[in-house]
Image (cartoon, rainbow, N blue to C red; front, side, top):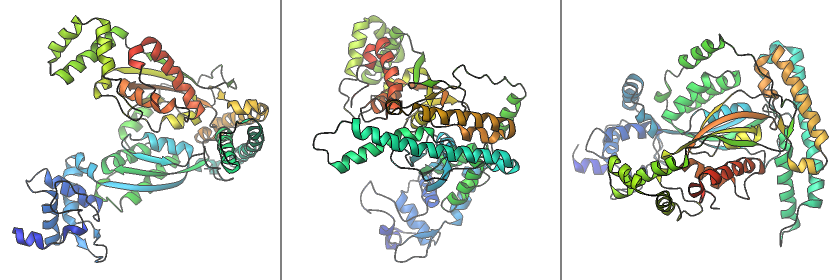
Length: 498
């Protein structure tokens, strides 16, 4: 096809301009976009040129003249993906195909599994901090159908949890209206809205992980495929069923990329192998214990001088073009104060929403958290590269009572529900173990270990220690920040910037 023929194709339906080096692409199936990006990697022609050729050759079906939307993906695109993505595992192609999903009425337990399945997905989730869940909006595990008496006990817990939730809302609202300071110029309407938000935030701690939530998900084909593999390998029927529902809907947009999605034999066989050498379940001495809040500590902090030396080497390589050997020699000739001074210069110009330079990604920390499920659901979101290790939800590690509930004299009401949840959890472990994690409340603690680099810690501390941050997660990161400030003073100096 010559240049004149290519120009006869109206590309303006699909790209934002025809004569600039940067342009937006739209009105095309995601899978076709991914294929044309792959063509670009194998030919000197640009995206617009390859698109024009496909349109001229009728490789794309343009059925809606008004919108110009290509409504069918091409057979050539399908064959290409089958060869490179499925056949040869050239999965980078799949990163250019994107799908957006709305997911409603899944449990908080399943939403956590989904959000942890792949770090490249993006989520926006229904917030129990700002909205009031409806009575009856909870998931009942399918396994309970074979155990009618256990199912009755499970449903009873969910109803009692919501009864307690409503009692706490009423008591918190009355307490906060009398004790929460008014802001200057705050109207009655704004004050009532703020009281309601705080009441929602604290009352939700008695709701269980069976409580349903909704979320929006955006992911590329590669991340979504890996997500489905993780969910199909889950211990929980709900998550496995969710994976198949997601697969069906994503296939409407990027069908070829999701062919042959199956559970991971590696994960399943590994879990089976480890189960043959069980370790007896250990009930914590904290079972039934009420805590003031979370605990967070460093399991591993790099030795300070070594940290300064390592970061100085990366700084000298990145900013001054030295070799690693030259940078190490130069760093070793510097005093601790000189290293601190130079590294501070790499941090001190950070503004509220800046991220530090990439050299700080080379210093790693390991942390241990004991925190409520409510806190955990915040921690697993909005992180930019923290790696977590965690077990199944349990009631063995005590629970957090929100401070306002203590102040309002509602501790007995709150703790009564915790005792009911723990009793029901134990009952489920004996009769229907698959249902037990759904009996854990937002207040119950879980044990989490995490690894993150200094760049990521800056992001988390900056985000989670602001006055606007929720009190529970703020308390966890204040503890970490104080330890970091004590042991790595210069490196911690600009972590709080908001």
